[in-house]
Length: 404
Image (cartoon, rainbow, N blue to C red; front, side, top):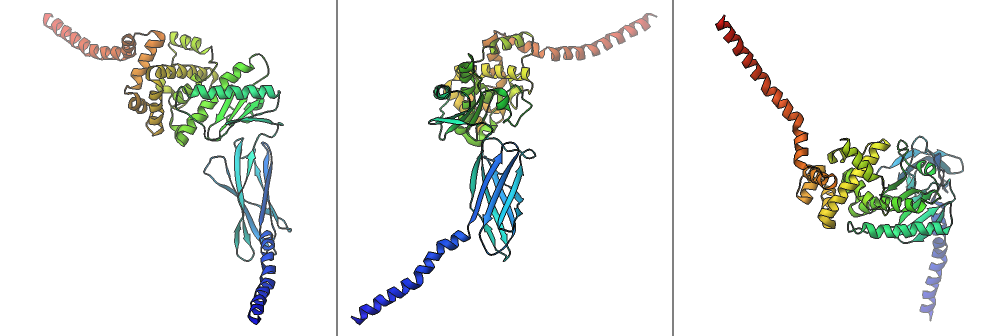
């Protein structure tokens, strides 16, 4: 009996000693915790605030943050107050951040006793909060809008689903994460969130790495047609990024924009007229000139879109979805504009362009090739004639001298 009493006495003693200590551990952990939060005024500033409950003074506090898919980490020293709080203000007017990026942030603290503490990572969505966004979901799409009723939002979702099915007829495409669609009621509001303010003619935009598209859909009879043009176009960019990841940047401009344009449910009716006029005037740029980028002016850009759409549609009709997939994969592997298409389709870009021109405009490819070579032929003819003229003139002088 005494053994049992002794055993229970030890257990009781352990409980009396350990339980208060164990009870203190959460409190101590809570006391040492770095708390952090962030709030922002869109386009103006983000205010990061932290607090550290400790008797040991903080000597320095640094904020670290990453925005979106960038690998760059930004940092800055926070200001301190006597009550253990610290604040860092990021000036968005001086250093803008892409709208709709998720910002991951944390604080590093240097304490007076020499210790360094890294706080937990937090995140905030840098959304254009100037508008009271409403939201409607139907996976994998989430539409955000601030003007119009739920029928408008449902139309956007319906068009997005049709666009996905249509895009999959060109390439084996899929989505493994949600796509956020922000529908602005006018182009001015939409363009204010874009980083490229010089393109004042842009009607929609996608950030494929963020899985975000922004649209301008004013109310009116053309609204549904604009949905059928803008949504599939921007969705194709997101789908291509989802297919090949960061190698998306290797795609020639004519291919990425060409695929996005032919995916539109309501193609631009002006493209054909624009192409024919440019062709008749001899102003049609070469496909090779559209590999890196498009002109920044509206008229040049629209012609580039029209030409890229026509050329890409021709390639798809001729080589099918499997050919287009090979083409995308070759460029994703890093081949340049000319080598990529020849590796994928077995025909040089210049030859494919001539055959496209013959198919679309009825050009005689041999006559076109001759016209392209004409300046060189004239040059060679001049080069050949000059020595001949010199020889003939010399002989005439010799003959004249003999006769004299």
